[in-house]
Amino acid sequence: GGPSVLAESHAPGHPQTTGGTLPAPRRRGMPDQGTPRTVGAMRLSLPRRSPLPAQAASLLPVGERAVAWVPLADGGWAVAGPAHLALTGPDGEVTRVAWDDVERGTWEAGTRTVTIHLGSPAPLHLVVATNAPGRDVDDFARVLRQRVEASVVHLVRRTLPDGTRVSASVRRDAEGGLYVRTSPGDPGSPAEAAVLEEVLREARDAVGLPTA
Image (cartoon, rainbow, N blue to C red; front, side, top):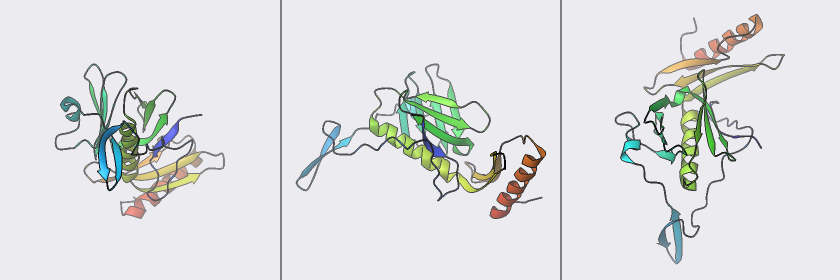
């Protein structure tokens, strides 16, 4: 099948995942996956996380703590923090993306690829290393979903008679400021422009932003 939707910038409290689901969370307690822990009379095994190299941890802005990470097939890392996603490849080049710039994320199990869809730049394709523990992938997918959804304060959508979807989403940036992002960015017709203006005004009004 097609890629699974990990995250989409919809309104909080209204999940909207199409095309699949997250990779199934791994069950804790599987043998030979981590350090055993005794709880009562039961002996459980907790899956290990990959250690995060100090160099990869430093990819995030100063003061931002890494909360999830996955090693990539090209030798780089994808590191998620509360406000940013940071990436590095074998050449050492660092890319940082604020969560409010992410429209959605998808997972293609067959190629182990996480695709980060941005507003206008080309999407980022992250191929997860085959030796990445399942817990790392699960944690990264969960944080990706949570942080993208947390950046969406309000969303207004309309569907035109021809099926075109237009939307205005109020996003919260890394500093806590609010702004509105519209889709599509460039209306293709006067009718589309009129509806886009309507949803933009409604979204701004809903959170107290100026509408004029």
